[in-house]
Length: 102
Length: 174
Image 1 (cartoon, chains in turn red, cyan):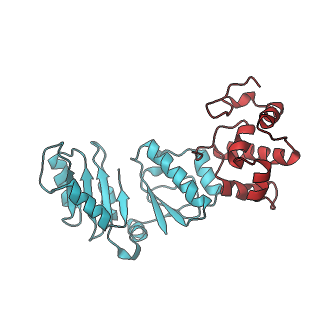
Image 2 (tube, chains in turn blue, yellow):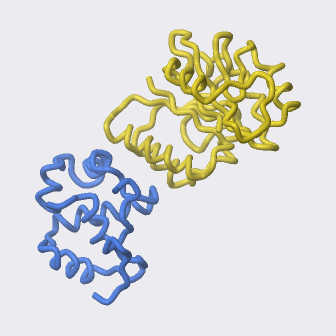
Image 3 (spheres, helix red, strand yellow):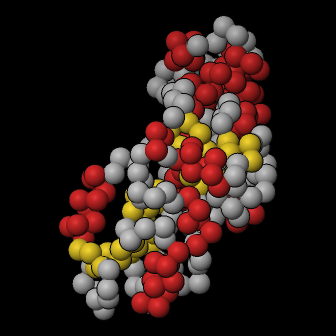
């Protein structure tokens, strides 16, 4: 966990991201990564590559329903990422803080 | 329907602010239409990823004057654009911040008979006279803020503020 982080705890350089880094970062915030977490993280990385950012919650759910499972809703995401699903998923995926997040 | 007007002369920060506002509107399923003024396709400040995002997130009402942007969009005539901006023919207040070398006179096509134009900044009087000749009515004023020479047809900031309050529909040309 020696990768450089920005002021918000997100990776400064995405090329330093790896699964073990994500697992350690999540664990340091009390989250044990499961397959469900990884499905969301992988989808968020794909969306980021496509659009240049992680979208706000409702738009993210809309895309996750298309790309991962049509059963995903906000309760599901909050169970996985209790503090802030968009923010935490972006962080563990090695992505910057979403631009729309204050 | 809320219409967001994008203008190629606006600074990049304004375009980025508008992008986030648009995302927010789409996020909450608010009906919104985008109207791109001429030149927005090549002098605008959104990158390909941002255009792709808007398409992905379901922006389904985009209109343009000029050339096609990198998203599904409907070409409008000036008249159709004016109809879009003037719901029920309500008068509109146009705001323009004078920048030397930037000519907005094409956009006068968007002005309707009852509209007002307020200009801010240190506009030379001969330039203002040319604008005034092309504006479709006498409601074309410079907002006098006390920092530049008083010229004809200027109004005080308090009068300008009153006009802003009176007009629910405001278009900012930058």
